[in-house]
Every structure is written in structure tokens, then in C-alpha cells.
Image (cartoon, rainbow, N blue to C red; front, side):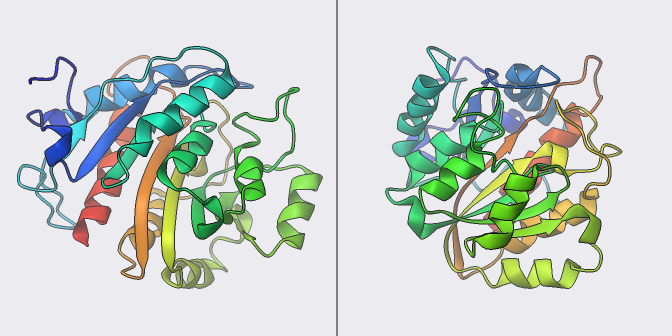
Length: 288
């Protein structure tokens, strides 16, 4: 049956049963604490992706041929944050035999996505590209929010590798420093630790999930986010991190998300950059 919503990269509709990868749209915006607009990100990224060439010159992936992509319609935001995150888990649980690329929406989504894709998060490593640690126990009276998402996953047993962090509380810093399941590479040490970052990612084994908060990138690359922070990753640094994870043949990359993007009021703005980043995630994954 033909889909009545727009397809990522403007590709012809592909039945989910035949797809290698599935693009999931999650327009959640309930706990943001500064700038707003993440609810419109999935639609804007899909729209902008229609302007991207199907051939990727770096990986030589031609999306007109493979991998086969299925784009799901947006999952309506209903109920409380807890109810929606649970719905996200159910939404992706039936896609475990596919690679899942989720377009958010706020970062809280990662909790539902991980819980939907694995039975035991303690067997999973989450690679988090982010300006914020997201390890606080409670934010604005909420235990489940965009600022607590990694704390909740850590409590479920996940190992976490954070790259680009440059905004966190003292409590988050102390937790990251004291716990051997959390490895944090701070933005101010990116250059001196770059070889260690790549070695750490290249040394990962087993199931991995990739979470990309666009505020990890320097605002000169993507200023369109709710809580931009100066001093972030360049485009090439972010791409290198994603490529190293996705092309590690000792890793089974289960899925990825792109979150906290705020669409630009006037195209092309940053919408095309965000769409290109999503396309790069798919291209790097498809190499293997």
C-alpha cells in the first residue's frame, strides 16, 4: 500500500517488511527547559532530506539501490511523558530486526528507544554525542526528562560513552568521574584526547546504540537547537565519531537517534544540515 506521508530522501515507499532500515518520526516536546521547537524537527528533516543526493560520495552508498528504507508516519504525542516514552518503546520493539533511525524531538526519547530495542539495557553501550551530560537525577521536578535521560539509562545498567560534553552540574561530574560504566570526553579536551576517543570507540564490542544530540556540534555548524553551547564538535569530528562507531565490525549497531533539533524559520537554514547528518548515519551503518 502506498504511504500518504513523505519519505526520507524522497525515496519511493518501501514496505516495512522489506526494509533494511526504518526511519521513525517522534515529534516529542514536553520537558524542554529553554528554547522550543523540537516538535517540528522530524517533519522538517524529512522535508529537507528530499534535497539531498541519493549517492554518498564518501561511502559510495547509493540509496536508490540500497539499503532499503521505510519511513514511518509520526507517532502522535499523547498522554504524559511517561506514557509517550512507553509508547515509543512499543513502537520500535517490533522493529528489532531492522536498523532504526529515530528523528526527534527531545532527548527523553532515547530512553524509550533503548528499552524498545533491547530486553536488557545492561548488555548495551550507549554512545552519546552531546553538549550536556544528561546525568542529573531530577530536572524541574521531573525524573524523566531531556536532562535526566542518561541517568535513567545508567540506572538500567547501560554503559555510556559521552563525547563533546561542556555543560553539567557538579553532581553529574562526580558521578561520571566515579563510575566505571561512564566514560566522558569533555569538549575542552577534544583535541588532546582525539586519539583516545577514536581508540575507545574502535574498541567497543557487542550491542551499541548511538544518540546524537545536535547541540554537541558547535553552533557554527548547527545553531538551531534549544540549548546551544559554544565550543562543540566540528562537522568532521562528529562525522568521524559516527563513522568509527558504525563501521566497527565488532559492534552490532542496533539503532540511532538525532534529537534536540529546532527547525529553522526560513529554509534552507540548518534543516538541510540536520538531514545530511541523518543521512550520514545511515550511510556509515550501511557500509557494513
